[in-house]
Length: 203
Image (tube, rainbow, N blue to C red):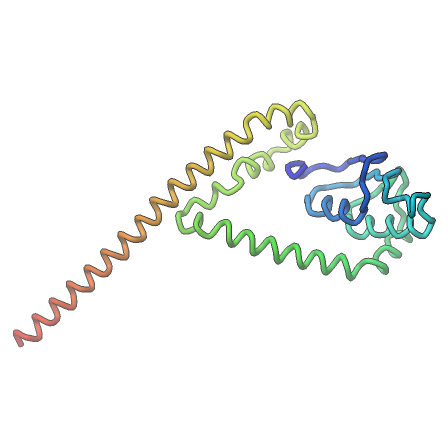
């Protein structure tokens, strides 16, 4: 699902989801365009083995509404302005904290992953295929088709392997180049100092 950046309708009702917060945070982390979500009749809606109380269900709805801000429908019901206000009052602070933590972690991860690629001047190869696909609306439309996902899965791993191989080879060459540059700089500096010393002796 990580590749479905244009996903806007998703239903996994009558499933085995035991913790709605974990599920919602997972969906939030996908950075998609989710507008319609159904999570009805999952185990988390049953408190102590029985049906969840109306208050439990309200808390679930408010949590989903505030964390997934693009939602328009939840469990087949239109989200109204009053529900959005109540959700914001109840979970806004938590949503902001999670957003800040996610942004910080993403920045750290990007810096760690891309540093050697930037030095080698091949940072454009990081998630290159995904970025190319994201530029075309037609590809976004067919991504939701299961046959497309099945077909792409046959190529995804080989493409990733070839990309990683290319990146590794270029990074090795880049490091060798950097070592050669350092060696040349040191050799030139040594020659300059020697020439300067010889000039001083002649004077």
